Image 1: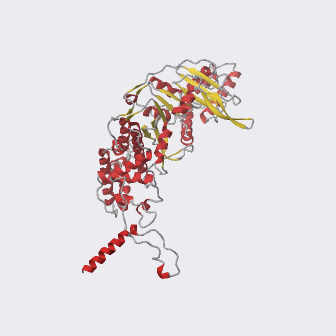
Image 2: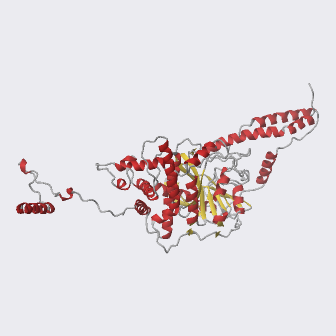
Image 3: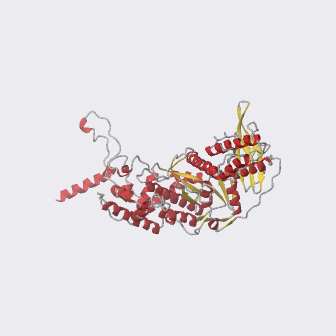
Length: 590
């Protein structure tokens, strides 16, 4: 058997280093992608270090075990030959070691230490903030809704719907189809909003007749069969474009959002053109309930709606206006190489549209030092909670918080424009910001139980935590407004779920713009007026008079004579008496 020296074995390791590294990274990527879809973790941002004491050490990978075993053999061999050869350090391990060394030199400071005020970027929006409409003019709910669903967009919707119905009838559908017009499509949308306000157990109950539970209004707008046929065929893209796209399935050219993209692009452009957001923005996810097997349906156990389409939403924190959004289509190739969370935020923040000096708030799924520094270079301030295992976050710094730290304790570290803050509430809260100093004297009130009694106590609170709690709820406020009068109901097509959500965005944004301009209608009143205008009816309709209106109400007195039960004690109706008198008079003349 050939005997290799320590140097020869070391050279073999160096020659095969790339093979071991590739195998290890391949296993790592597959594991990280699986964890991302199950536990909402971004594989390109969450890198667990071996120095993190709070998380268990991961099991050694196959390539890493093989490399360590060979290195151990080399060390033993070189000891026998009295040769001391230092093993090479991989680039990734060297980078992690350098970051660990740099972080170990940092120390957490307390609230008594003075933090420098970060550089403030001047707020320069590209347009005046608020609605881009004249407040002097009168804007009805219908006119504002048409800013999102314009007649041009509805005309395209009607054209594609008619083409889809023609395709269905050519395949042998039994129903009779007549082309839908723009006015009829607006009435159909009005019925959808009416059903969002007046709830019944099934769609057919809206056309139920001869019952005390009947709802008379839908039948005056559209027949039941016509409503069903339009619902079956409503289509946002042309069927020919869908067929061309379906042929590309399995290739990079295939577009999963082909069936919703024409209307989605129109709605996104309208959201950005009609209203310019104020300074504080929020980025978060939104779920559209759906369990269809499309490859885009996501499961998020922490959300109220666990199954559905995931949308990344940019909203105005002051009123919940949906500024922009994007639909998550599943695993992607991470175009920038920085991960899904990085791409989601940067794709929503358009510098040419917004301007500079905006403050963006996000949760720990998005926050990373890399993202915040790049946003700061783009003249966007950012603030958000972060995860301790994120790359470049301080881990082993001295004087950190412990589980026994008192409530209200504050620790912070500044790294250039970034400030990392930890605050002990009922549990440890970690926030990173490029906008705020660490502590400015803010306080937070909490209910504390002392000596068997609950009392309100004041604790010091870092500035980033206070501002985060104040401005992070923009997307949650938007979701709340949408859920009040949502058009969502059970459908047979997944893209119709997205279509109904576009209607929700348009109606909610229209209400917010109307409130900013006039502010004289509640959300319910706005929706009622919008429905009547879309359906082309008057909101104050006189009820129909019937013959039963002339029957006297007082009941008969009790009597033992059965012949007088129906007449004793009753008064004669004035109208009926006049009719009888006229008839008697005519009979007399004849």
